[in-house]
Amino acid sequence: MRLFSPDLYRSFGIGFALGALLIVVGVNAHETGGAVASPAQAAELIKAPAPTAEFAIAPVEG
Image 1: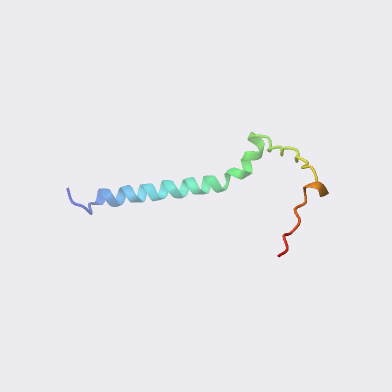
Image 2 (image 1 turned 30 degrees about the vertical axis):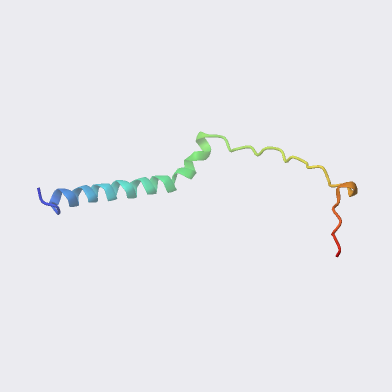
């Protein structure tokens, strides 16, 4: 068996063609994706409590 046989080039060619086809299908998948699944719903934003003056840290002078 030779290292650079025609079977090797044929396998790379088929792999390249299938990979290119998968990329094209993946790029165009967003067009049909909306009809298949509903869009994601964002969670409600959590309101953090505001800081108060009693927890303020004064700078140290000296």
